[in-house]
Image (cartoon, rainbow, N blue to C red):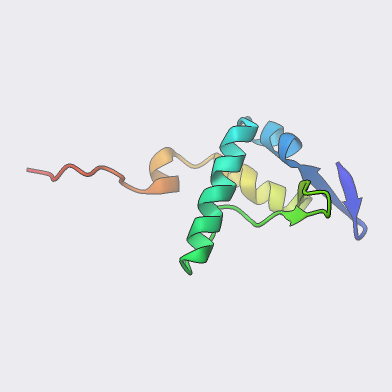
Length: 87
């Protein structure tokens, strides 16, 4: 945890622990969010604050949004990803 501009911020590890997910999962969501943003689409999770040393942090408010995202079902997060056509 770090205070940035008088606001509590959480690291990737701390945010992953709040979600009950691995840091690799959060990094995957960040990468997917970046790709969606580049394509002009809405991010999956909020963009982190990046310190000059490269460390990433989310405000408590953004960390809560990530926790809420983590509680969605796979289908709610990604939609129906099936490539099979229904008969």
